[in-house]
Structure formats: C-alpha cells, structure tokens
Image 1 (spheres, rainbow, N blue to C red):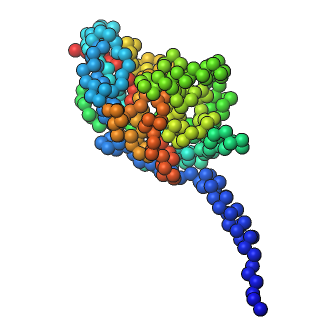
Image 2 (image 1 turned 180 degrees about the horizontal axis):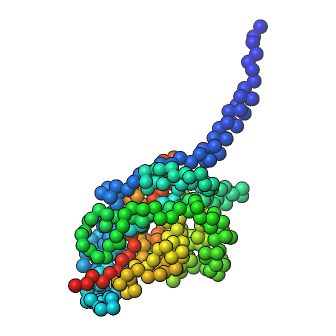
Image 3 (image 1 turned 30 degrees about the vertical axis):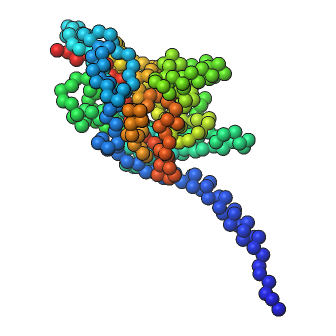
Amino acid sequence: MTRRRPPMLPFVLALLLGLATLPARAAGAATCTGKFPNPITDICWSCILPISIGAARVANFGDQEDTDNPSSPVCSCGVNPAIGLSIGFWEPARHVEAVRKPFCLVSLGGVDLDPGIPAPEAARFTRPEGDGDGGSFYQAHFYVNPVMYWLEVVTDFPCLEKGSFDLAYLTEVDPLWNDDELTLILNPDAVLFANPIAIAACAADCVAASVGFGLKELFWCAGCQGGIYPLDGHVPYHLGGVRTAALMAQRLTAKMHRELIAWGWHGTPGLCGPYFEPVMDKTAYKTQLTYPIPNTAKEAGRCCQPFGRTTVLWGAGKEYPVRGEDFAFMLFRKRNCCVGF
C-alpha cells in the first residue's frame, strides 16, 4: 500500500503570496544611509572654471561651460566708489539632497534626525493602465556649503561667501511640499503654464540644456527632467531615481529663490553683492552628484551638469538598491564680483 503525498498546491500558493508581499513591505521601510562629501575625492574642483576678467576667460581647462560676463573688466562699487576688476567664476556654495525617509540627512553621513513630527515618506506610485512607471514623491534638503571658504582654499579673497556647512531648509516641516494645490500660494503663476503649448516648449529647453545651458526665458521648464511647477515633491512620471533627484534639486533651488532664501550673485547686478531674484535663473547653476556615487569622471572634459541636462549623458550606473536610492548634489552657482584695488 503506497502512502499518498499531501497536495502541493496550497504550499505553492502560500509561497507565492508571501513573495508578492515582500516588495510592498520593503517599500515602506526606507533606510537612512549617506556620506559627508569628501572635499578631496567627492568634489570636482574643475567646475569652478572658467575664471573670467570682464568678458575675457583667463582659465578654462577642459572647455568648461560658462554664461556671459560683464563686458568691462573695470568696475566700481559703494557710495565712495573703489575701482576694481570684474571677476567671474563658479562658486561651490550650496548642497541639495533628495531622500526617501523623512529627516534622513544623507550629506551628514546618514543621520536620522527624526524629531517626531509626522511627514510623508517617499513613495513610487504605479499606474493601473501600465502607462510608464507612475509617479513618485521625495523629501529634499537644502544646505549652505561654502566649501572654498571653510577649507581656506584661497585666503583674503573678498568674493567668497563666508560661513560654514549648515542645514538651511527641511521640506518635512513645509506643508507646501506635499500638496499640489496648497503650493499655489507660492507659485500662482503655475496655472499659466499648465497647457499643452507651454509643456511642449520644454522640449526646446531639453535640447538646449543637453548641449549647453537651458533657456532662461522658459523659466517654467526643468529641461529634460520635465517642469519646474509645482514647487513640491510630487513627480507625475518617475523615470529613474537620478532623473527625479535632479528635478528635486532644481525645484527646491527654484523654491528657495521664490521664498527669497536664495539670491542672485551673477551678472552686472551681482558685481557689488547679492540681489533678489524671485524667479530663478537656471543658467546660473551647475550641479555635481556627490552621493551615492560621486560624479567626478570628466565626460568630454566636464563633470558638472547645467540644470535640465538629460541624465542619459551622465546618470548611468549612479543608482543601486537600498544604499543607493538617495541622492545629493553640490551646487556651483555663477558668481560675478568686483574686486577693488
């Protein structure tokens, strides 16, 4: 008499059900990892170039990209004008990160600064009709990081912003960052560009940013990353973590300008100091990925990217599971300064 084996179908169904629930559990348990950017190995110092005197570029190794500078090499500032030289360069002065877990400070080594304030975690939303990968949501942080000053790379240079590394903004405590409608208080002009014509114009901005700088006249566009508006953490189409994080960096910087936390430092108005710039000039910034994989390899002689440049050119291999799903960028801003005699 042979012994009958128990049916395997219930065990197989139970196993499949358990495996199907694993991704949902993992998605809700975001880790907090990070690394403080090493100024020697994680920052691409060639991004400060080119250095200009007036309209003439005197240092531009690797054919670094640049915007227009004041035409005259001579400048003056103050009530009692002091004659000086018009200097231009790209100053590493700010840091932006996009994180999945609220209050996770990636650029401080993965410190979990959770004060007990409720804040939504990052999420990726799927679309039932299978239209792309769906949307996503990230928290973001804005740091003051005048690295050239606190490292004392150059001494007694009046054009460097003075200060130390400091956390300036947390979106977790900002109710506008998680609400598309509430953020209209900050950017009511978004309704003017929520139409097919304005959205289609961003294709030209993508092309321009991929070969140089984006078109500052199209201030509502984020180049190949989509649209600047709304100024919050919701992205309608998630096409990879690097692309979404680059959009978060651009949106948060634009938000800082709209709230008058970030100012303009470039062009003829910036020769004598910062000025209010509520609509960000995206051509005044270049970004360099510092985490999870520092983008220090010089592709075509450059390792910094203007706002809006397609991530196809530089973002491959920069994202990996668990420890490589949060991102941090060094912001190089254009600085023009009148150095008096």
